[in-house]
Length: 230
Length: 186
Length: 224
Image (cartoon, rainbow over all chains, first blue to last red; front, top):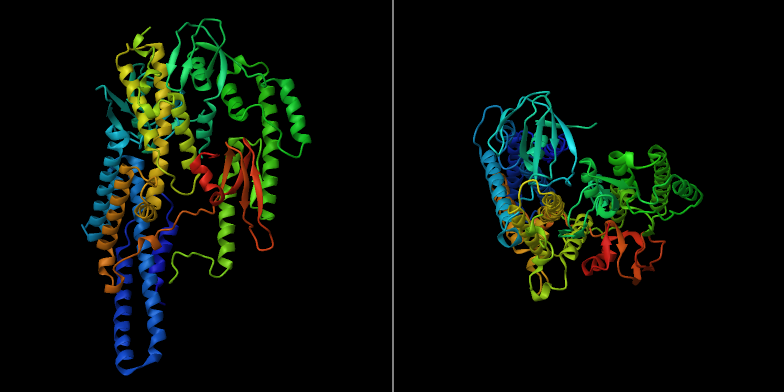
């Protein structure tokens, strides 16, 4: 059956939940492109024959093949576009520098090769980051506003967070280094008292630290911290 | 809309507090607040009231309707009437939740109030489900939704709108030529 | 108490003649209206660059004042809370718009192209630049990865056809701010008839966006 491979690409996307970026199915893409080439060559031949020998009965099969070609094209485009949306989501999820494991998914199959696909994805992503950055810089007549921050309405609550991973030492803007150790419990004052900072008070150690709100949001999104809902 | 965003809007509602500190008038971008004098009631937005309360800088005076007797009346009326009765605040649910969670010591009979408001809410949500159901099954094109609060609308928004859109798509595909189809040639 | 804050909110409206009708409080209300409308409307609405710029000016002005205040100032903390709240609405508003621009980019650009002179533009200049780059970037990617390797007659994709249009027939919830008479409600099925409704001030409704789209832009209704 024609288009089987192309539809398989789409099915693959359906199986993967939102927010995940599966390895690129380069093999699948190659097979669709091969099918397209074959369909096209056959159509070329039939078109010539239909013209030169007046064989009108060839026209229906030419039309069928053409429909298949369009469908292949549509499926491939949809597959590629869907990947862009997933890649785009990474920028909003993790900030402009991706964590290593995510970067890996974006680039690589088992053995990393800089294929055209990989390269193009990386180029798209870096151009997207650039466009977004210059958009944000130019907001408000050039004053600039980072709209990837403030994702949630501000709350003046003291929230408790748990450290889910050994994130190691973490340097805060004021230069202090805190240790984010797995399973340690921390109280974050989403402090409006300190210039949109979050105040981190380790339960065990008493000193207070401050880290910007966006950083805290980011650590939660990255799965380093978890909001403990009481 | 995320429920936290509805709550965010609710936090703009004004409540009365009795501060235990003094402070001059504050000229906020959104309007003036204060002055604050110990023991003298003053109107502030809920977001500020909750923050001051958490820092033990004020006592919050519950809104008038947050009262067992009034709420009981409301509950009876809500159960009796078929339509949605007017609510005392467009954010009654969020106000109750926020005030009871952060200032329950300032609210007499807090537990009873929690139950009553929950009863009112449940009754209204049940009505809302019924109306949504008949809206869909009658294939209505317009509904009047007076007295519904944003939080109530929010509970059915996604489900109802998605269903309506889905049905619309199915229906418009039935009529040949009516679809402005994106892929006409496939 | 710090004097720098004593008139921070009220004096920053300068003497710009066309703005003198709007107080900072009204400006914030405008932003919140725009935010909710944009959140709930299926299509991208007209840009509100002036509001965005004025709000950012207010925030910058206030933040500059706060720089001069001692640490631990009680008023300052209230101002910072307010700034955080306003900045959230502003960012969320701009995010909603950007999301729609990304979702509907070919259509948004097409509308901008076919816009008559004097008609207000859908996109702010920075949004327009972003949309153009997004289109070019995406086309480049599709071409490099696949289209270039397809048969000669299939190496382009008509983005206007490939990317779905906003569905104006979506239902929306709305509250009426200015009374409207004789709003035509189209029938849902063949055996229904069209009818008209009056939208009373303060009343709330559920109906198709297409019917009331002009009222959203004119500000006569608020999406909720």
